[in-house]
Length: 284
Length: 284
Image (cartoon, rainbow over all chains, first blue to last red; front, side):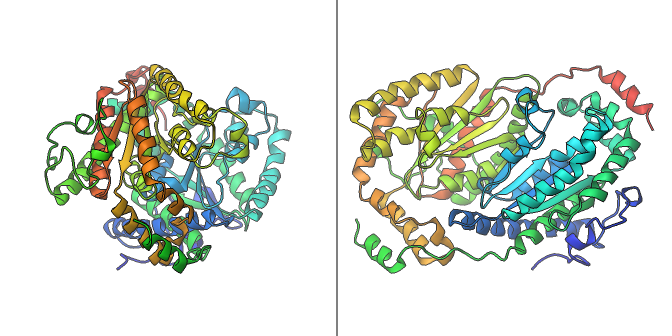
């Protein structure tokens, strides 16, 4: 039996619509879920099993000539929990079915190409669940805030990204874009923890505080992303992330709903089952 | 508390030594483990947690300038359980720390290069656990049995592989090579299951029976691999695989022992911890 139910599907509860204001979202809220943390954690396990089964169907479909795939795009400020989503949500499915890619500061080779070059190369193949930990959206987030290219350059990228994603969707990829939203207070707590526990020092980067100091500019850049790139083919979902258990549950639901939407069966045999059984039986 | 103990470390119980005969191995045996399946499954969970922690240390080391990595090479005949190892053993650690690559029939591009070209490209970067589902060993297994290249060509490959692996080890990669050994009877059972359950049809390939018909030739080719490529820098481990729970436990132990052998601590801070705390406190 599945623990708990959402008041409405996560893709409806969390979807960015015209007029959605990032500043109005409470990062401690749990939209669509009014049950306890315990029930939520139980549902995460249940839905993880379901997700795992759906992932296997997708993989089987890809092995059998299908062209479909799913792409989860994860964005969020430092400490919003992107890594935790990968570990605890993506970690629930078979690693063979996952194509994970983290996008950091572009390498010299990447810099020689258009900003979408490295993104295209990392798109999931048929049957895969692709996961982008950061993505081409950095090219209208950090790049915009830090003025790494002129405004005229990043201004055109929103339309370019929409065109790119429409092309990816047309090729068979279901795109799920998630922005994890952490509050300034919660980020302070999480950064402090990294400074207080020696086993977390490696996760800390003094540059994180430089970014934190530009909070309003990042909010504005995120708002522009939501306003200009949440399309029917590649919608954005805003996931409050101060409660890690909720964020993990919400992303699991979003992925599970996306996979359910593909209505995947198991591929038919492309060989004569009875003949193969006889062949096998005749062997030592 | 950790459930059960091995009679001796898995890397000693399973290591291929001079004179090890593949034909003498009982695929239903559980070398080094004389406890029950239930105790073994409990230990798998315990060791998985330990593995996960060690993997994070390795990852942190890689992020902090370390050059070490681990490479698990998985070989075995069809149905030996390579996929199950990936799912159930590698699936226990953070996907961010894993670089998984399956090697199938070479693509046209791969065929234009030396057989080690695609292998080199897939080697794990610093801090990663690389996993090869099949590997360059196919170039002295299927290639030898099916006579895909002349004998003079594959004959030189054993030495080439040893030289290649020595180079990889010298660059900081701990190599763990696992041959999963399934019995002919158990393989028959597993193939039959794929033919009897429609949700498993996609895993079945009529070519599997053509390979099965050449069982003695494959045994001979595997024996040559063990005789000629089990080196101190890159030893082979023979893992009996008729009991899936045992094979998963054994590979988990081998990986855990390899990671323990690196004696990884947590990286020191490369910034002034107290100064950063003050900076953080001074921010809103």
